[in-house]
Amino acid sequence: MTRRVPVRFGDRSYDVLIGPGVRSALPGIIDGIGARRVAVVSARPVEWVPDTGAETLLLPARDGEPDKNLATVETLCAAFVRFGLTRSDAVVSVGGGTTTDVVGLAAALYHRGVPVVHLPTTLLAQVDASVGGKTAVNLPEGKNLVGAYWQPAAVLCDTDYLTTLPPRELRNGLGEIARCHFIGAPGLHGLPLAEQIAAGVTLKAGIVSADERDTGPRHLLNYGHTLGHALEAATGFALRHGEGVAIGTVFAGLLAGTLGRIPPERVSEHRAVVASYGLPTALPDDTDPGTLLALMRRDKKARSGLTFVLDGPAGAELVADVPERAVADTLARMERAPLDRLVAGAPAGAAGTEAAVT
Image (cartoon, rainbow, N blue to C red; front, side, top):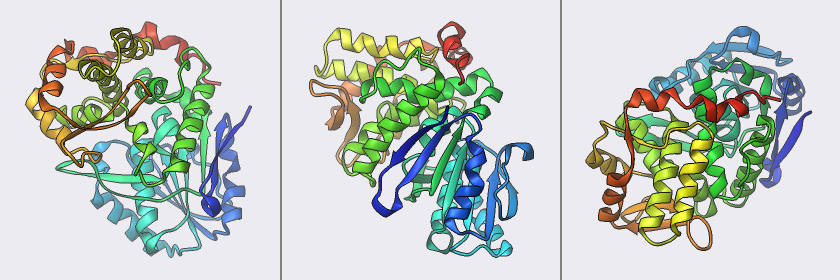
């Protein structure tokens, strides 16, 4: 069964197709764009790449933070030039969230913008990175500090790709699904994975359609991300994005409780929801609170002091000027655990979801 989620941006609207085998729709999409040449940037084996129906250049990529930088973008754009790619042609990404981000930014910059189609192959990329038009790469100073908004022409979330993923990679994507519980899509745990993806994409599509450039409600999508991004950087990306977001979601609940925004039972709900997905809920035991505070001050949402998306009486919202003492005290109250134990996951909490890739 194929699920279709529209993302509305006027004449830049597009569909997200979710289900087994939806990558076969790629030739029709390329034909609709009118592209004569297609550059496919793939972090996956050749057999994972569908026919485009046009003259195709296949460029290898590597998923992961080490290649998520401006040097990779420059390399891709140079290859586009040698191939003769024009503004009326297209670029296709095949890979996880980092590949989606890098290829999306290259497409946004090359000739000031060429159409891009995303074929996300990880759960994290399907439920989050491929939808909404945010593209970015890292600098040594922090994560996702250089980027652009560039909406894709289509997104094909083929759930067949997910059957090949190791358990940790699936858990990584579940971090983004778990945080949906607190920003408008509760009760997803236990649903078939394709339904969880569709619910997460539907939630994100509604938010980004109303706020493409992150000036208002789109901040909600960053629930758990402020500490999550800091943890990724502080651990040298040994902690994956979804794992960091999971821990950041637990922290957001504790911080909201510290500030008196939510009652104790709602604070406890944050940990319970995250744990139900088999995700980590504790800080790595060797992370320095001062380092985390410094990294969180660089968060892109922060315009006035430490800034977080926090739960409250009217639901989640952006909260600026959070007192540093409250943040430090909340970090001190977090559970601690060895990093290797956190990334090993809790199989009992994740097994039901991993078995339901339909």
